[in-house]
Length: 138
Image 1 (cartoon, rainbow, N blue to C red):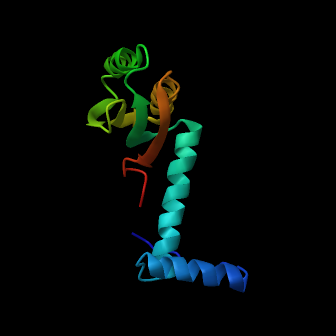
Image 2 (image 1 turned 60 degrees about the vertical axis):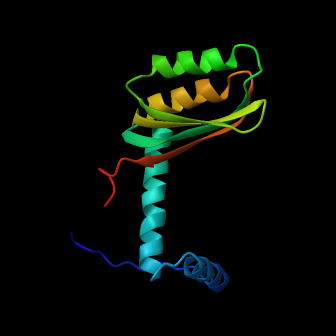
């Protein structure tokens, strides 16, 4: 793999904050931190554009007492069998459940699945976290 060096001009204060954060996170140098930021930027762009193969999780907290939420969650998961790899279900208390759904597939389709699941009545909070599958990342 060929490596290219390039310069970046930034204000001193911004660089100082960046250096503090990368040190806290255990980066060996700025270059590795910048490469990670670039990878994240590429993955987010592909996800927003609906292009490329992605993997990720859809995490949601829901009230299982809400009418039909459990049935709708299961029905939607069965509708997307080719994209849903696995799911984990955790009973938080007598009313609330945490569901983590592991997904893989076309970015646009994964976003569609997350939007449908997270908008169900009874879902209190949720989030889609995406990454590339690694093919496009160097």
